[in-house]
Structures are given as C-alpha cells and as structure tokens.
Image (cartoon, rainbow, N blue to C red; front, side):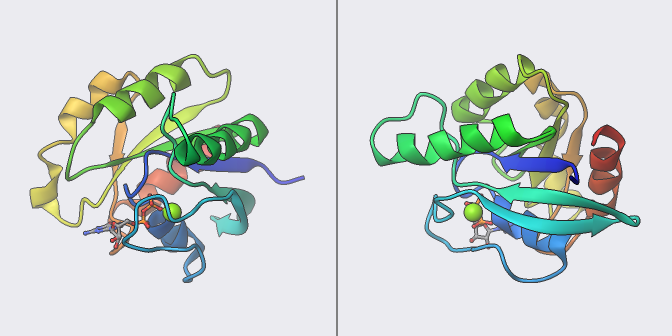
Length: 162
Ligand code: GDP
Ligand code: MG
C-alpha cells in the first residue's frame, strides 16, 4: 500500500486549502467556518512520480471537550494510521497555546513529523516563521495553500520521510 501522510492542526489554520493545493484540484472541503472538516478524508496524491495518501482531518484540539473532542478523536485516529504527520499552523498568527499542545504530543510520536506554516502568501508574511522553531519539530516550512508558494519544498521534505 502507498504511504500515508496525516495533515493535522487546530481548526481554520488552512489544512484543507493546503491539501487542495497538493492535490492540484478543489476537493477537500474548505469553508470560513472553523472545524468544517469534521471527518478524516483520504485522497490520492502524486509528487515527483510518487504516490501517497493524504488524510485531511478536522481541527485537532488536544484535551478538547464536547463536539470538538469527537472531531479531535478523528484526527488522533488519522495520526495512528499515518506513516508521517504534517502539523499545520497559521503562519500569519504564529504559534498558539493549542499549537504548542499539539507539538508537545507530536514530539513524542514515533513517526516522522513535519511542520508547515501556511497563509504565508508573500515574503512579508515571514515574520512569525523563525519563532516556530520553538515548537521543537524542526524546520518550519512556510507555505501558501492559496497561492502555492513554498509547497514544492514542503512536498520534497514530506517525500524524504515517507
Ligand atoms: P482548515 O479548517 O484548517 O481546513 O482551514 P481551511 O483550509 O478551511 O481554511 C480556513 C480559512 O483560511 C479559509 O477562509 C481559507 O480561505 C483561509 N486560508 C487557507 N489557506 C490560506 C492561505 O494560504 N492564505 C490565505 N491568505 N488564506 C488562507
Ligand atoms: Mg478543513
């Protein structure tokens, strides 16, 4: 079977938009409503001639309560299924306490974990990026899911660990 990459992160950071960019088509559900992708959704992706499965997930909020807890559980299931995990943060906002909690969990993962900061649409959007090293997940990859900026470098790094 082809390798699986789970795309996780808190609601509304731009996971589904980035997944669409990687797929090169509009399929993953994108909306302005936080947490709109409630379930795991699997897509076939192709980069540099290699096939892999992308799992888009709903918003992951470690230690969430209520409805958000059920959505988070789906993300956690996706992470257990995956060969590698991509944590997505909002590069315009920088890291939040929820991102820090996610990173803390992922630092203990036995799978490779990569960090993408999306919504970095241009050079001016790079301000929050250096501070993301503090999440302890290695190099932060700045990307724009909307425009595609940086997605090639990110995918090269993904395929190196898959
Ligand atoms: P998800 O909840 O993490 O899947 O986030 P979505 O992909 O649904 O995006 C949430 C919001 O952020 C939407 O309004 C998107 O249009 C916006 N967004 C996502 N990616 C980008 C990006 O690269 N640049 C900008 N400027 N906005 C983005
Ligand atoms: Mg989504």
